[in-house]
Image (cartoon, rainbow, N blue to C red; front, side, top):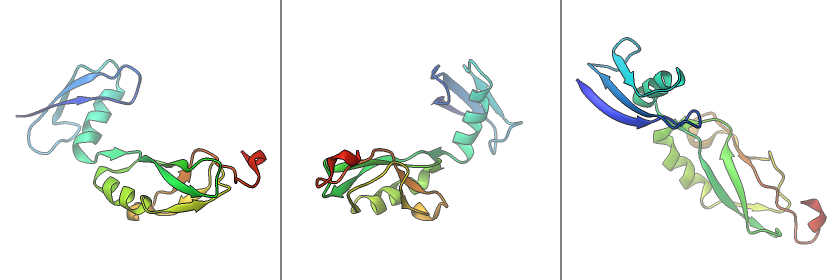
Length: 130
């Protein structure tokens, strides 16, 4: 039997899940202990079969009152795509002003997921825009 300890991040409880399974992990073959709610079971199965993460990072801003704007994926992306997505975003530079919700990338790392701005940055020439 395979065994893994996973910390569930779906709710504030942060349950430490003990997950056991035989063969391929499926709903029928996975046994989860330590979850305080039903979300832990589906989280454990998802983490074993297709783990995903929401990517949050910052992008440089040219001509802004702040030098960086925070950005994030609008939904989780496959964990194996996180490095490629981060490498795509790292060299980017946005021109101020930058608005919350502004789409930075339409399809990051071929995941079909957008990257959007989560912190507005006003232009240095017009600080009233923030």
